[in-house]
Image 1 (cartoon, rainbow, N blue to C red):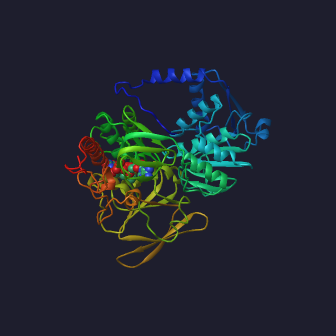
Image 2 (tube, protein in one colour):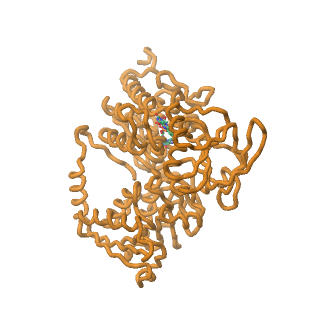
Image 3 (cartoon, helix red, strand yellow):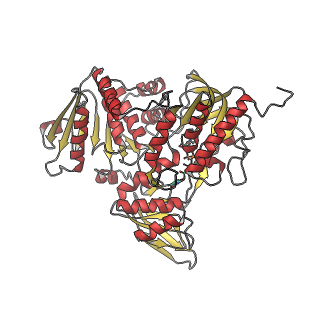
Length: 543
Ligand SMILES: Cc1cc2nc3c(=O)[nH]c(=O)nc-3n(C[C@H](O)[C@H](O)[C@H](O)COP(=O)(O)OP(=O)(O)OC[C@H]3O[C@@H](n4cnc5c(N)ncnc54)[C@H](O)[C@@H]3O)c2cc1C
């Protein structure tokens, strides 16, 4: 998704009835029918097949353009379309090669809706850059994207696949594979983290990609990490560009627009930043307990009432000056101020096997990848709030989790430690991971007790890591922003040493909480407002 334009009237929130009416109207404008076929084996009429029936029924109540037919897996049509998994949904199979293995549950519901809309319109809505790349593909691409219903990064990648399959139906076919419904297939591809994307059986993407990077990876049949946009990319004039759509960036967006500043938030991955993958939040004022993704949805809806958000777009470069130039993977901005709210990214353990088995049993996101390990033994490495929260999440999901901590006491808050004890999650104290072992995917970990020196091999299917976060300061460093000795952005009431460049949230260090990041976002936006009226970097003489 790109350019999610906000409404200007803060009072204007859309009720469910208004939303459904808008969907009905949108479907009625569509030129194309949307035939859906479901194939189910006679033995496996399970929760996934039932969910598909329910989801399609809800959409069919909105439009007669959607038709639904169901067939057994041994039907002639299954042979004609080469359907082998149950349940499988085929969408407009005479026009496109798009299929869902499993059901579009949870986060994927949104993707399914967008698929219906694009198939109905017969348009991919890809930008020109991406279309140019796809049009250069000259041989078939069979794409598989592994997703889970709880993964906030998956809809973006699934959407990339759908857009590509709609844009080039002659050469691109797509299977979206729900790992919960198809654990065997996920095992076969060693796809133990989501989203994971294969084309012609080659891994082309680990995690969500921008649409341009996805298209470039699909064309080259190898993962691409840089996409250089054309020089004549769209130019947008702004007062403030906020880099990062976590709590700091979203809050800053609200405050900046309320101060009368034309503002845009640019987010590379999932909106909400770290909160998008936080299972449960219990310390954000006003919510005694709220799912991280729910909190993000509330924050994003609020921010959208004021500010533009450009999602799935990375900020690649910033050229200080007046105005400053901000180059993203899709367009250029000229702006008077830049707020760096780039947050933090997870740390690596740095042991043998960690890189090799990333996505093949090594995971940094229990919310995303937990469903694949239900009933299996895993370890969670770490001893802080994140590790304990995520261990609890895995435990409640039905994963057999053991906490591995290098010290003899946890650093997590007492309330979380209490939950951990009540859940009876085993803890290996004074223990460090020396090596992650396996053939195609994780099979065991080599552990060492740092007090006794004794090593043990523990058979596990997964290694979840929550050993801390490091500030995302690459951009800051690139433009000469000074850092503290600990590597965070050095600032004076959110003003960095580079004129016009500000900071907020985890990237500044400090307490690293949602409520503090939000507060810093608000303060930073107010500092920007003050300075744009009275720039602090100009001397009185210059003024
Ligand atoms: C598992 C877990 C559990 C947690 N639990 C809690 C809790 O219970 N309570 C609590 O208060 N806090 C919790 N936290 C901490 C909290 O989530 C963070 O403090 C907060 O999200 C920081 O917000 P932020 O906006 O500064 O950064 P982030 O949330 O890290 O967001 C930064 C955003 O910037 C984006 N970005 C970075 N570089 C670029 C670029 N070049 N272009 C575009 N976008 C970019 C990133 O993709 C990211 O989305 C938890 C964190 C984790 C990981």
